[in-house]
Image 1: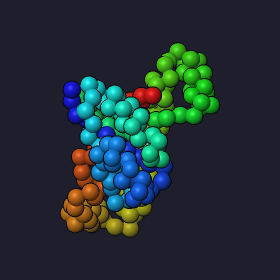
Image 2 (image 1 turned 90 degrees about the vertical axis):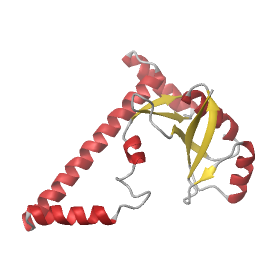
Image 3 (image 1 turned 30 degrees about the vertical axis):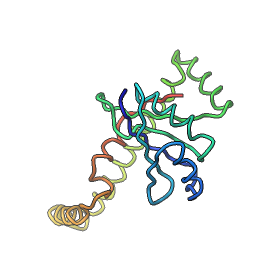
Image 4 (image 1 turned 135 degrees about the vertical axis):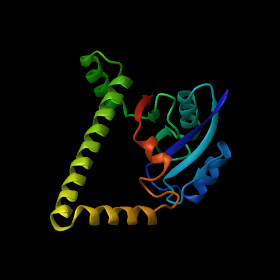
Length: 175
């Protein structure tokens, strides 16, 4: 049996009493924002770890999404999302129309949405850079960018850590 690191995203910040109660059921680490928690949980597979953590905490915390903290060897992060019965029905119908299982369909939709988001961000960045290059020389923009990046090398700074690479991994959904 392997231990898996599970990241828990909540629908709202957790209260101290909720966190205390939940920590009795499962040892948890909380982020300062109170919306993200971490747990290390033993299970044969990452999917089983996610399902087990959800079962143990679903009545204690306002759970939203559970995810494996680290990508698997193929670079994929597993997400565990609880859908309403109506959403499950719609997803099932859409998946059947495409000849897919519901989890495959949701995973495909999520991967497509992530690709689209990344493309939009790249377009926005390109437009901003083109605007800057209309007023500044390329070497000025490069030097300024290097200066900013060197000063932002702090733990947890977005865009510089290994977790950010994991967040761009392809998701796999479990129910």
